[in-house]
Length: 173
Image: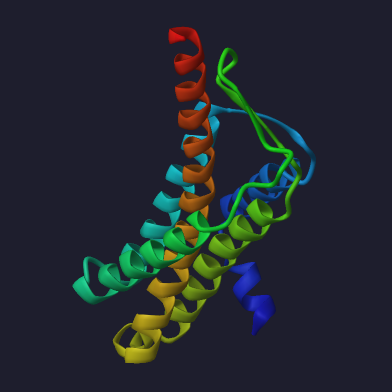
């Protein structure tokens, strides 16, 4: 049955998978990341996550609420964690020096695989859309991924704002 699912998967899905693996693998190495990329990545991944919920459950209030609550909870939890000590912000270049991490790759694969598995499950068993456990669990999983992505980006934004404020204070003094 797994082979049938894979054989009926559109080819573009595999291209998206490869692209996400490549983007995530780049995050394994320390690098410089622009402020715009720090912003764009969670917006894009959050959009894919939200699209996953909407494509599975439509505009179901309960599904969207589950997604939003999970996103908010994970965002709050991630914001409590400190950035790695090696993280730096260069205000002139508007970029961050960040350590390599497997977290972005895992989050991207998590969103992709969740979308893939949910899509296959609903194609084979459309009645799952109406099962309470499924309609709660799936949006919460998507929301958790979104919250982690957003929290990681907001921690970097907080560093940028603090660095800019310190620089402005030093110039004023």
